[in-house]
Every structure is written in structure tokens, then in C-alpha cells.
Amino acid sequence: MVVVADRQNHGRGRRDREWVNAPGALAVSVACEPRWEKERWGLLPLMAGWQAARVLGARVVLKWPNDLLVGPDKVGGILVEASGSLVVAGCGFNLWWPDPPPGMAGLDGRPPGSRRRDEIAHAWAAGFVASARDPGGGAFSLDDYRRRCVTIGQRVSWAGGGAGRAIDVDPEGALVVEGSSGRRTLRSEEVFHVRTAGGGS
Image 1 (cartoon, rainbow, N blue to C red):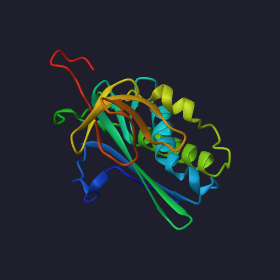
Image 2 (cartoon, helix red, strand yellow):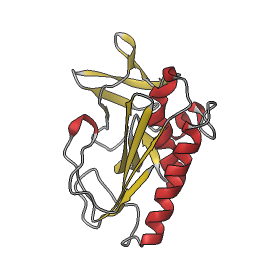
Image 3 (cartoon, rainbow, N blue to C red):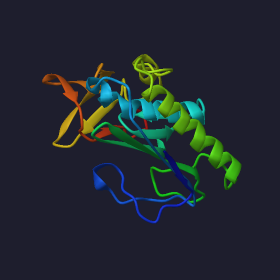
Image 4 (cartoon, rainbow, N blue to C red):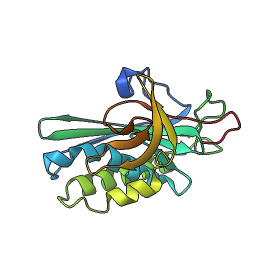
């Protein structure tokens, strides 16, 4: 099942954050029963993000675990939840946003037409379902995600005051960071890219 909308009056992001709707937005949710082993379901949000970046083009990169970026600005986000054997993946795309708040951006320079919205929605949903329904992951590989993930190699911080450099994404989808006290694996923590005053990472 796939549900597509160009506006949401109510929604939520990760950690129940308030939903922010761009003027030219696209919201897509797809429900399916994955054929992956349950131990690998932690990779589904990464696969959903990678599929979205692939559909949107080379300038869109990934911030672990669930954000789509152009440069430093967020242009979309992913939320994946499971109930029993069913998984629902949702993706919000900021297609056009002439006056976005700080840290946000739109992908296009003009309002999107219905054809563009439909093409993006169906390409993303079809790619997600095809990979989720293939026990081997279909077109998705963790190496593909790593190559598109700009968090790897960045200085990062996370809730609780931790900080370090992200060095990898492990086979279960967790972020591996190297800090002053050694290596740590982050599975659900919110991660921030740390930038210097001059704008570097």
C-alpha cells in the first residue's frame, strides 16, 4: 500500500518532533512485509534513505540515520516503524521552499507539478518495496549507503554531551564513532554534525 499527499496537516518526525510542511511538499508512506531476516531490519531506514537519495539525484546526500541533505541543509527525512510483520516507511520531501527556516531547503527553484511529485513518490516507493521484498536486499547494499553518507568522517556530537568522529556504519546500521574514551556504537541517539566557526566540518 502506498499513500501520497502534497500536504499534511498533522504528522510527526523522529522523536515526535513537530511536523514542518514546505509550501511545495511531498509526503509518501508505503507499507509492506519485508522478507529480510528480522536481525537486519535496523537497516531498513538506511535503505529507505538511500533509495530516496538515488531517486533525487547525485547532489542529495545522507546524514545518519534518516535525513536527506543538499549541502548542509535538510531537504527531506525518513521515518520507518514496524508492527509485527508489517513495516511502514514514510518519507517527506521539501520539493520547493522559497523562504525556508535555517537549516532547511527546497530541492527545486519553482513549485513542483503533479507529474514530478508522482514520479518521485512512485519511484521511491517502488524501490523501497523491491529491496524490502528481496531477501538479499535487492539493489541496496550497505557499501552504497556508506558512500552516500556524509556523516562518516565528520565530527559529531550526540545527546548527553558525547562527541567524536564518525568512522563507519556497522552491519546492523549503527553509527560507529571514535572519541577520547575509545569507540562507541550509536543506535538510536540523535547525532549532530559539528562545524567550525569557519564553516568546515
